[in-house]
Length: 449
Image (cartoon, rainbow, N blue to C red; front, top):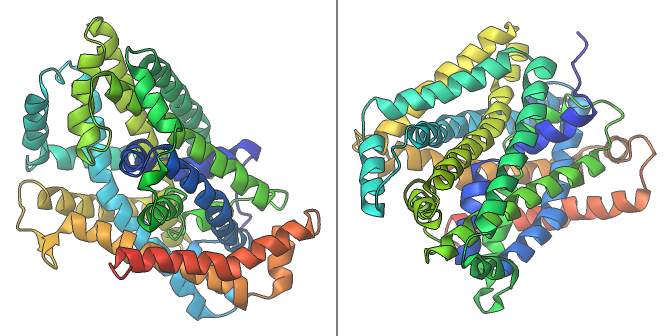
């Protein structure tokens, strides 16, 4: 059966959508705040372009060559069934991530509703108490997570062109538009200049090895390396798609949105004297109060900005959940010869169960634990600390050392239409630099470094 391919814009917007998520709009700003502002951004951009892009292209080569689900694509390019374990691990990893990611996405959905209903009014203690009450409820957060997975399911069952590509073509420009609107509003606030200066004036006194490791980890995880997402989406690339150029374009979009997220949060926080390195509480406790204070002179504007912000978060989460859902859907569909709707239903059902367990473990039933931590924390640590670095590391080894050089070179150069000098530099990075960088992340996560 002929495989559906993305259109020209679908390649960029769909794959960029998989990379752009809550990590860009939530995690990136507070990590920037903790690690010296522009100093962290410079290191992050370096890591994306010198280390992240080579890893992206490596997964693109696996996917386009295989033109199948992740497990089968790895088997085909490695010519051994054993290499398929990387794809199986990617399917498992993406399913687990989608399960606990849906919990946070559900929180965004609830906050969007609360913003529209005008419920996010009050001081920081009131908002913190409201968040605690909601997140510890035994039913509400599970329902919101299930609803978000239902929206994702609706997009997935419509297929590649009518579902994923059409949604990406709509969501990504809308996400960028909302982000620009909030950035402009935040930068016009009194005292916003302090936040802008912090973002663009490097503080190298905070720079150390930990900052580099943090930036490296953020770059790899933000670009979805090791989840089999890039491999799966690349299986829909046509022979005319230039892999290296596409990777650069996607990385540029990812970096631009991350920096814009900083421009959205730092000026607003600076205008009311709030530290932007508040960690996980920044989005759900600190920022609602920031919006109220920053736009207190015109409450209607604060109300609108709050709605736009949580709509932005929900859209960013949706572009990521769509990509993660597709990994499992196409796997079950092709490996077990199932209709797409039934395969998608399996993934959605499994993820709803994972989401319910994760939500209850950090809320109503804290005794739900694995290895001494909540199920949600366990899933987070398992994927981020072990599965993602392992998948990315094995992919670099496979492409750099085991796949015949002619296969890799033909895919990278689009059968001789791209500069060979770029290919040689890229191959050197994939063979040596990227594996060492991934090992650094791995050992840092384990607390060895």
